[in-house]
Image (cartoon, rainbow, N blue to C red):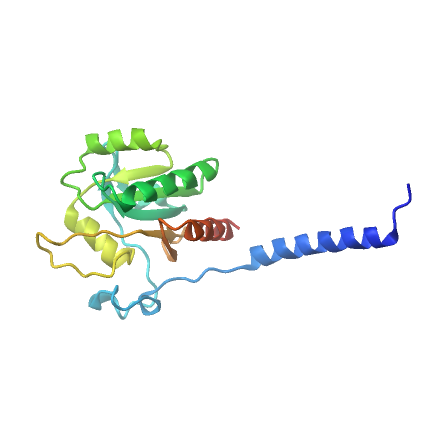
Length: 213
């Protein structure tokens, strides 16, 4: 059977486009988020002069009662979010989306997840363990954590820039956010995403792959 020369040209052109697309993806760069790049309503006044922001050290307790620190995420790319187990609105959607990300990257050791409870007094280790079992959490990839409320809220506001409100430190001080925060291996924030928006989840997946490259 004779194949017209134009067919060879077309196939070659498609191959060229595919190679170009791969090369363009590998060349993509993600921004590094510093306080000056963020909505200033998010930024604590004490951080306005910071020019190279990294996530602060943390000490949390996971679903197995284990202490979790930055060392557990050393040289890892991870996604952080803030939730509480009794939430019936945005949190189930967010948790399901992290579950999908966990399944997608379950064989990539460089990718991990960190969920922080904003009602740590209610979300004890036993509650988190039951929640993790219900949601299909892989313990080696995803820590669902509790800890000291003040510490968690400072992380949300001063490390992850997860919320707009400053809080009053009192009874009504409560964080409720859909944000997923992408952190690279150098503890730098590389993206912030709406955790209940499918298009944002696709953008997050693409950005994770850019960091992996």
